[in-house]
Image 1 (cartoon, rainbow over the protein chains, first blue to last red):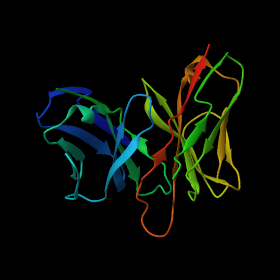
Image 2: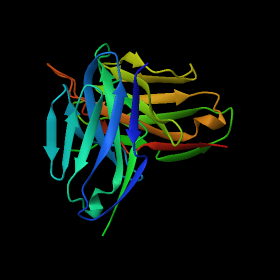
Image 3: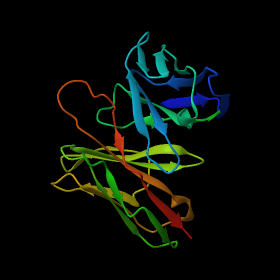
Image 4: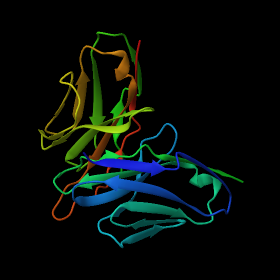
Length: 112
Length: 116
């Protein structure tokens, strides 16, 4: 069974304090690993797709990396507007379409 | 362009009733997926429709069903509601064209169902 575990469950940072969120996954053949951001009362918003170990993607203060067992979302010099729940999801290679398995998420709070 | 629209946004039902939720995808998107989000289980895949055909199904009982219309709009139905069905139901659309699926889903804001 495909599984995604995210840590920590919650993270509080001061503005400008860089950190990383972890996503460990177990899947029989990875088609893709995805990061989403979810604000309270909203649906998740797509951030990145990573396909193979060693791949990296960047967007503003966020950088996602991928190994064979886990992914990291690095947040550099975060701002209060980066506060949100960050979700990691995987899709197995045997799946097609949009059947994703999500982790429980990391709740990030950035204080000014 | 307009995003994914879900209706109703909030609804309250009692046990044993049924409910129908609606989703209008982004124009041109042919794939519509449904997810259930709860504090305890997180986001769980319900099913996906593509060109009016269900092409993926999650591990939910038969009380959960859906359909897609020729204009790509989708509905999901939950019959014989149980307390545990209280959740945020999210619809997501994507355009599946040629080549690699990017996994970029566009989610609506969800329909929050409360079962009393």
